[in-house]
Image (cartoon, rainbow, N blue to C red):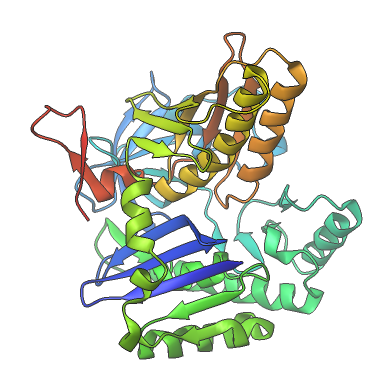
Amino acid sequence: MKRILVQCGQEQIEVAVLEDGKLVEYDSELRGTEQLAGNMYLGRVMTVLQGMQAAFLDIGLDKNAFLYIDDILPAHLEKQPKQKPAITDLLQVGQTLLVQVVKEPVGTKGARVTTHHSIPGRWGVYMPEADYIGVSRKIENESERSRLKQAAESRLQPGEGFIARTAAEGVDNELLAVDLEELRQRWTGVQEVVKQPGKVPRKVYTDFGLLTRYIRDGFREDVNELWVDDKEAYASIATMVGWSAPLLQDRVRQFDTRGGSLFSVYQVDEQLQSGFKRKIWLDNGGYLIVDYTEALTVFDVNTGKYTGSINLEQTACDTNLIAAKDIARLLRLRDIGGLIVIDFIDMESEANRKQVLEKLIEETKKDRTKNAIAGWTKLGLVELTRKKVKDGKQRLYASRCKACDGTGWVWSK
């Protein structure tokens, strides 16, 4: 059973995703604010650093944005030069450039931007200048991949690119065409705004807000129920679903708050607090320790109260399998990005190690954010990476404890 819960307060909108009663995703947005990732800006080049092959642009934010040379060269690998030119040959100080934010500002770092513009829709991602057609790796059926590529190719204009999303599997060609055309019109709107006289830097395109993004990206056939506790938000979501996914319209339901708040009924707040602790208990009595460093995030798996019933090897394997599932859940819940290292309990059996790794791969496939598992290292650790778009929610919903000088966390929601 998979549920999406939307709780609308006076100051913020919160979205929670539950799978079989367990919280797997959480996001919130203050009313009147927005995330930056996906927005497009007309910026001005302020600094060009040949040694870094990068430039810094003023896009109107507090800190200048970072642009690497790979985000200037053509997106299609076959069109890139065999040897990278000097960035000073491509950009000059004072130059005006249309860029898109791909990574939110984090700490002292400004936003990362690209000239590889893309606009996501429900079924695909439109890339107006990429000249490339792709299909989500999660669609494994070769005939379906070929169909989606042909459907996109027949509708694309010269120079355009398109990537079919996982949700596009089995979708009618005409619906794909409607999605593509709507995205193309939005890009045309961006170009018209850019041509208009105005100050530089300035924002020329804003990506959708939290609710619209979740309907577009997360509300699919595997969602059994979508509950909303606000009348206006319910009407807005019902309209969006009626247009983009009419077959799922009967799964959108309005929650009656007279019986208590939506999040309290489904124990969301309780799971949020337990899910952001340093020590996370597993269902079998084992536990995880989660530690953050500047370079990476570390998960340490322990048997805890679980003593097993057969032998030490089986006890370790059982705990590791449960831990692999919960670690994949916590990556989504906390939105952990970058390099991640997992110290599973030592196992002698190669078959058991393979089983644990396969379990981790299986569970991370549920993640909408791109990740890559490198596998076991020679020291018996598992390494993986997860795309980092914005600062992890550990930093957003918890703060450093002043009493212990920053070695602990205090829940601040």
